Every structure is written in C-alpha cells, then in structure tokens.
Length: 202
Ligand code: GRF
Image 1 (cartoon, rainbow, N blue to C red):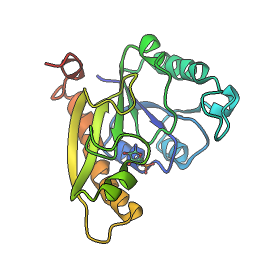
Image 2 (image 1 turned 30 degrees about the vertical axis):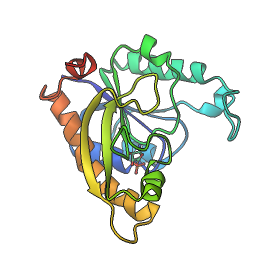
Image 3 (image 1 turned 135 degrees about the horizontal axis):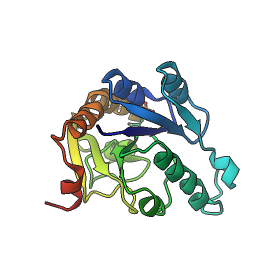
Image 4 (image 1 turned 120 degrees about the vertical axis):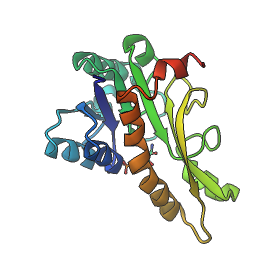
C-alpha cells in the first residue's frame, strides 16, 4: 500500500479533494500556519509545521536563508512517516535539491499550466498574458529543476475564456485539479501509474 504525504501552504482546496477521494495521507506538512493544516487536522491526519522563519527566511531575502536546513527536516519527516510519495499541493517553498538525496521516494508537484509552458509562480498570469486559448495543469515528478517537464505523470486541459482574469482562470483550473490530482494519486495507489517507469523515461 503506497504511503502518501501532502505538502501544502495555502487554502488547501486541493488537499481537501485528496482527502475526499480517500487517498491514505499519513502526514500533512506545511511551511507556515495555513488553512490546509486545519483541513488535515479536521480529517484526523497528523500535521506538522516546518516553519521557514526558523531557518532565517524573510520575504524578499532571496537565497540568504537556510533552505537546505529546512529541507532536511522535511526529508526527515517523510522518512519518519515511511512515506513513498510526497504530493506537493500548493507548497510555496522550493525544496533544496538535497531532498532527492535524503528522501528516496517520489516527490510530486501539481503545476497550474501545461508544462513545458509557463513555468514558475506566475503560470496562470503568464498564460493569460500570452493570449493562449487553452492552458491546464500538470502533475509531474519533481526534480532539482523548477517545474521540470521531463517526467510528466499526467496533464489536464482547461480552456481560456473571453474576459478571464487570473482569478477566474485559476479557479477554473483548480476545479479540474480537484478531481485530476486525486485521480492520479489513486492510479499510483492501484499501480495503473508506475512512477519509476516514468522516471526511467520508458
Ligand atoms: C493549485 O492551482 C496548484 O496547481 C498550485 O497551487 C494551487 C493550490 O491550490 N501548485 P489550493 O491552495 O489547494 O487551493
């Protein structure tokens, strides 16, 4: 049985849908107090806050904080809970590459664009600015590269509509993501998706 963790920082609506689909989450990790933690706690899932501020993080500080130290504790938590797959769902901290040495399970990310298009934190805004007719969401295996498109697990397409704002378009994407991400995790659980095969590129 695959042991899942979820990493979240924000409103946790995707996390809530993962819980609704009964994906067996062993722990939810947040990088600050946030609604996602309440959602997990209400569902009886163990939670932990690993605060970036304890590692010297302040807004606008750039790289002058201990990202590796923060990441080591994330990795240790995943190991403590014997996690196989850590699913990031709106986790706002970029993990240090040391995670891939310390934690040998898979880290998944969901990105609100059709990778390789529109990488980075402004994916929805950038898609809108580019005038594309269609965008979407990608679940991929995280690597040391930001929004790495080499190991795409699955994608869902979402139309851009006339008069869309970042808010309306992102919400339409999230409506899809709330079914799409849990279904991907279900397929991993039932071996319909094999992450190792995707990672090996075959
Ligand atoms: C999602 O759009 C996901 O693609 C992105 O962060 C958002 C999380 O939404 N990585 P929420 O906090 O679960 O509502």
